[in-house]
Image (spheres, helix red, strand yellow):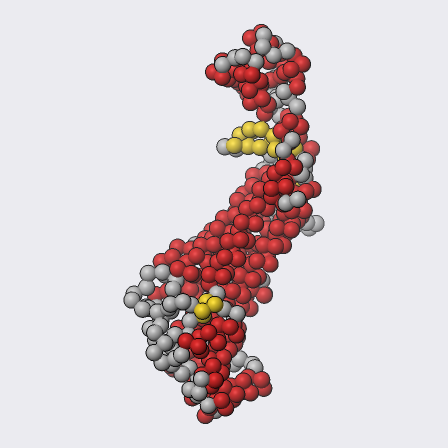
Length: 437
């Protein structure tokens, strides 16, 4: 975790204090269930909660000092609790294995992280929706292969982003449900030394589902799906960030990141206004995606468990969620404050002498009786003259001067084919599909 790209609420989920707090709750709830089943004295469970009510502070340094000797984090924690609770603490962890605590805790942490990320997505969706409606009918040029194609609106660009992040949210909701499982099943998942009802009790208390079948660990395909979903969300962040970066290029300059008073773009060139936030988002997306492959490689553990996954998850759990949280918040700010230049969009639309209307002429010629091949040739030979003039010539005027074209289409008919509003007639339909209503 790099503090520069971290926000406090998400970072706190991965702090040792939160991890140990969850460990305690798992152990105490399990002891409650064991007491109800008559396996341990009721006083044992009560002693844990009584101590917790009066001494809720987690002494991380003390636990770390014990681990330095035991070389085992869960044993170090249990030892520290026992030192504070006293003799009744011996009934903790009855029939459990370390992974029961570790994996269930990780499920809680990832669920907590997912809740923050879902809130982040809601904020981003709200910002995108606002800009989409603001520029619903702001015409701009659509590009394919980076080349002028046909007119769209800037609102449609935002609507596309909204639909994409709405899908991201649905995927994350599913991934959160998939990861939120509890396993308190013992050394190899057989419940040999602990009743399945203990697992059910702990799961209910922590807001988790019961893992249907575990080994010593919760199956890692769940984690692989979770981190793959984070990677997809990161890719969607990058797609919108790259769009902004392209639109901010000097030759385009249809939109740009907000440039605050006092901000500097370059140490050498005072005129620079660089897309630093969206470039940063492109880099952060790469880091989030980098968690997906090791998460998938964690699926294939030896037999009932090995620990090859453990070190990986200690990295990717905090790093991927903290980074994605920061990235979503940053992108929300970019969208909310994005400077949009409709006049420049119109200027770019008009820059190539009406070439953006070439398909309408092609189709009109076919409707007027020309073959598609003939129609394509008639339009292209005039379009290439405009292209080679760098937009100095007008496609409409060239077509009006082409006898083979005017033999099929009148000047008025040709003029009507260059109507910009024609391309925007279904914007309402698309918006209704995306936003409802």
